[in-house]
Length: 237
Image 1: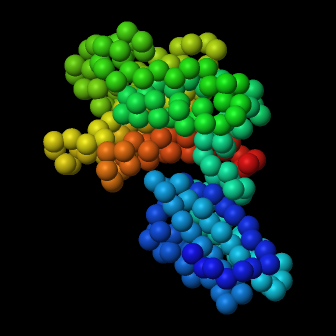
Image 2: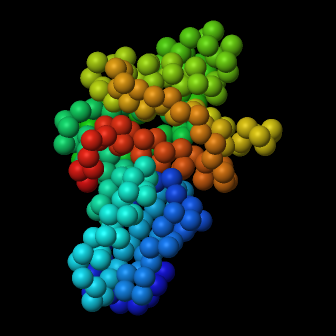
């Protein structure tokens, strides 16, 4: 981090970038008058753009370039974390969220509950770590688990349908995967479902890192993807 004092700073929040990728995409935008810092934790990142005695046109030009280059990664132009962004977005829309977790083990629900006002939008969070719980609580067909295993696109699909079967819930998140596995090729494999019953998606993602880093990245990925799906027209936070 550059310790020089600047007259003006602005912040953009991102998900999905590490330092190496950020430098590859935006490193060339730094100038003698405008400094750009980036930091990330489990792929949740902060871009700080600092200036001193530079005209607003020059600053706006750099901001515009960053927004274009990182459109798929930016979720806010305020210094706001993913959990707060999602809670405030759901409050603004007045809609409820349900979460069905396996690999994340309640981490998504807990992270959302860190935010004041979460009770207005988090209807329920169900940790179905055991296959029996998936069948009983989310009505995942036993045949799906037997044919495709608990870590599969098909199981994740059934999980999100199960949580969205509650008519009080408009948006859902479902997670299943391997935080670590005896076969290293499977460690970090995660399936994440997000969206509404009329418009939901299932993604297969591979995360690197320790067991808990994989779980945290899955949590962040789910929140980010739901934010982008709900707020696909414009960023309002």
